[in-house]
Image (tube, rainbow, N blue to C red; front, top):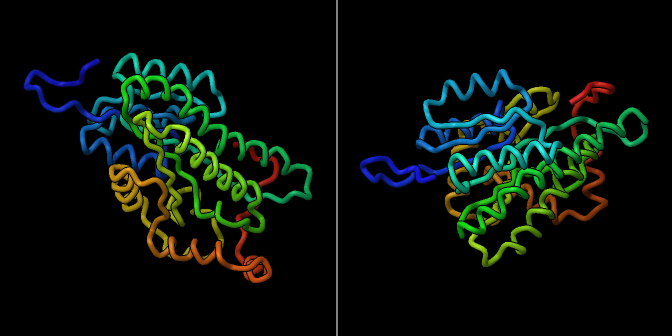
Length: 267
């Protein structure tokens, strides 16, 4: 479908975002809507998706689904491409965080859910779009990882490991798609003020407001950055984290604040 109007204005960008009902995803949706983009919005909470879509003032399609459901994402991608054409940007933003420990048996299900959403949800998001984007010879796949994927954080084994896996997966995908016209961007934000971080009972250095984070992310996507940590202060911290010897990291990390566990609470 050609999205040019009768005055032959340039086609609006097509942007597909998961985890769009709140936090970073919602802020990105509002940012791109302000630019006039055509949006595909995915989240589990239908009511919030409907409220967001009604408030944007731009062409959009909503897909209430769980990113763990690969078949549902394939159907959503097919519908979006059929209606609007291959997307220019696909942002796999859906993610969850939960305090976890390996010892308690009740945390095993939380480990599984975190990996399924944060890693396999990214695969499910990208896979059905690669064919149409290759056919179009263009587009960007963007994965939202985290600084937490740089080193293992105590009490957050599931989250840290899932984000480390996401970073490696995105690097593999980037190289696989070289020469196809599809660019892959890995975004590793630090602390951003969202419902996910509101429950953290510890100081969060360089905390960013979500609207500011969305603007910076969009600029990085436009510049086709391969990999970026934001804000810049957290990028410096991330480099230092990687350089620290294990004994020093252990000594520092053991004193770090921990996200609360909520055993038995579903995602």
